[in-house]
Length: 66
Image (cartoon, rainbow, N blue to C red; front, side, top):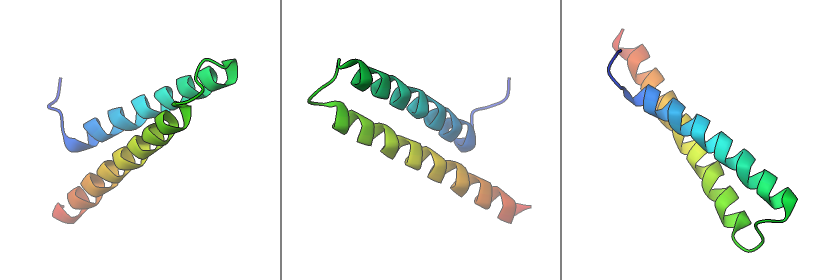
């Protein structure tokens, strides 16, 4: 197995955040989360954006090196 790099970590962060956002939306639709659902959803969206930014940063940096 290859070593972990920044792009792999960013992709895992994006994937897990999308899954978490789906679970939060499902819980909101079922009425299980009332007060903290907006905060949790915003946190998941923030993590998706941060993971995508890490992937783009690593991709651009590796493109400049070659």
